[in-house]
Length: 85
Image 1 (tube, one colour):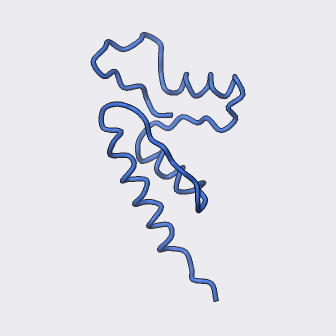
Image 2 (tube, helix red, strand yellow; image 1 turned 45 degrees about the vertical axis):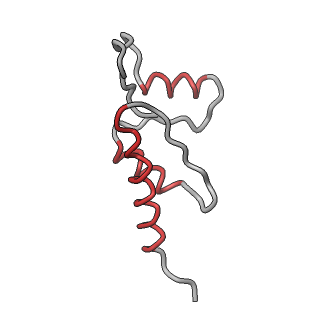
């Protein structure tokens, strides 16, 4: 979960991405996490994603750029892995 982006409406006072992730965890979503930036979420996903996982990005604003950033990090991770003997 990243910060909430107010598209064409005023921000909701007190609402934050961190608060939403905390609420999801409190209601049973064990893996809900907050990330403060695209770089942070990209690093975290590149560290935990397994082959065959699906990563879905949803949101407003420039979140459409996040998918390409995550894909590049995953591809870089694959190139850095040693080739099995």
